[in-house]
Image 1 (cartoon, rainbow, N blue to C red):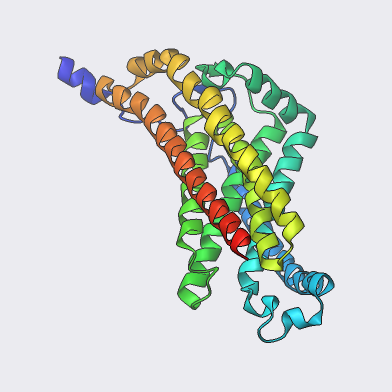
Image 2 (cartoon, rainbow, N blue to C red):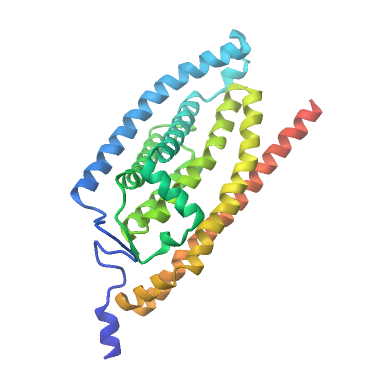
Length: 307
């Protein structure tokens, strides 16, 4: 009898249900799919427009900073990978727009501030319906990372472009799609939004570093490096474990109890562990990436002293 009960229970919440219950959320409803396709197309169009504008703008700005010799053979601008520069300008622009949208939307801003003070509602079994702003933000994150992954893959197979062969960016966007899509499907929508926004905010200084390095704009580079050195540990090394990992451990017992009633108990136990293990692994990656950033800054400082 026990075996029959185990086999009668699903190993994953049956669609459209998730590990938690968000009122009115049907992940892959027709309106949601249409919105996702539309946003992927919009991001693809925005990529083409922004890259087309960023490359000549970057060249012109570099000339204004350094003079026309900067673009001549042997000058700093001659060695810039402008296709990569355009892609970085696009990524930075999207990060800035998504952050601005989250801050400008009253409903989403209020919810984000409430999570910052008390993260427990993100892990509640029964959650209220998403606001239109929250839904739009998370669908936009899925669409942005899907389009970026497709663009990098397309460039990878078309030619030897450095931007197309950036495996780190490919893995970054693929992992982001997986995170956002799983949060969307399993109803952990508020966790997905909080983690995505935290990454966008802390990515902005990194975008600034890459663009400033390409342009040889030292003053902007120093500001971006300082912002990254302060913002990365504050956001990813402190806020992330305190507001995401710790509540996932301390506030998710009701989710586990709910899963035990609806899923195969063995699968429910594994699933509960898988809520937490990837979050911890991501935090360890943040620590590793921050060490790499510190090493790069240290090498730059030593090189500057020698020069």
